[in-house]
Length: 93
Image (tube, helix red, strand yellow):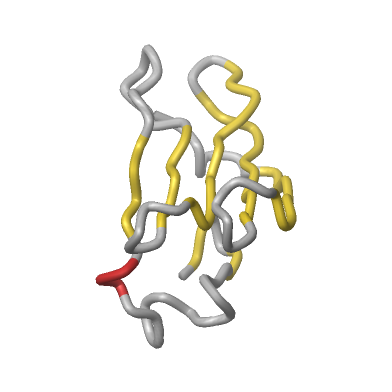
């Protein structure tokens, strides 16, 4: 799966090609004042969190960065976290 031109995977599988979409559920946050969802939690079929995507640092309605936070099997402990810049024009609302 690509997000702003970067590949990321669930359990080392590209979701679009190899993953089992039945067991993953994206849960969006309430939209911001511009109607943009700023946090999306991906959960396993049993409800434990696997991945959180969070959009960060809005400037005039355009988000400058996003973070990917991966969780251990318990769905609570952070396994890894990465923050990326959003190229100009990709995060506008």
